[in-house]
Image 1 (cartoon, helix red, strand yellow):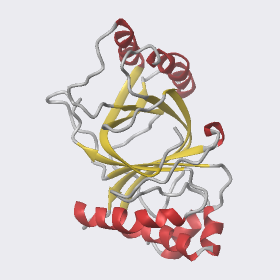
Image 2 (tube, helix red, strand yellow):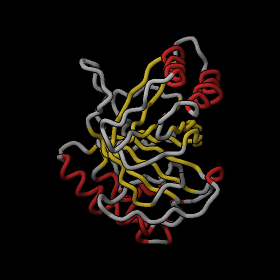
Image 3 (cartoon, one colour):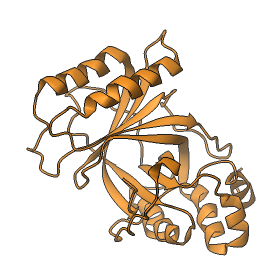
Image 4 (cartoon, one colour):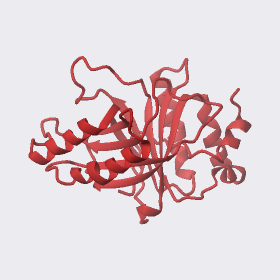
Length: 265
């Protein structure tokens, strides 16, 4: 059973659950060295019995504004899933998500200690189990290959290796070969790889159904103009061919970004 005490106790071992308010102006990014920040990614499904509108009212209307009072956050972005314009006709849909969140913070922050000392942080954390029905948490190290040009849709890809390839070898190839290839692609509006360093668990909230082992997470950005596509080029074909040759499977989500605290990149 999920209760306030159990959830606050778990806050000591998992990253803070990042959410933000739709329509609220983003706070400016703090001047920090992004190499010193840890990045958390959360995949979220709403609690059974809640409509999408009810979930968003809690997540965006209540919990989002409360994030302004949480010390230590250096970036706070929510992705609102939408139809993927790049999905091929007839392709299977990925498991349903109601939100994808990203947060950046310096390592070593004790969120449970903050909750004991700060009633606003305590209430912010304790409210999450009342509207979150399933969650996957990933503590990651961010690698920025092409700095994002935000404003259009963001596409996040959950990438898994091929059978017979070790996790270490696959991640090494993606970071040493696939990522650098993206720098040569004309018109690419951003490419970031998030290397998974830890998979925190929340015993009181189950994992998202249908999402298996993920080796690395890729993020790219689309232009606000649907007609402004990344042009075909030898570099783009080489980049895509490397993915086709080395990726085992992937789940792809398109989303609208809502920045509550502007991200550091």
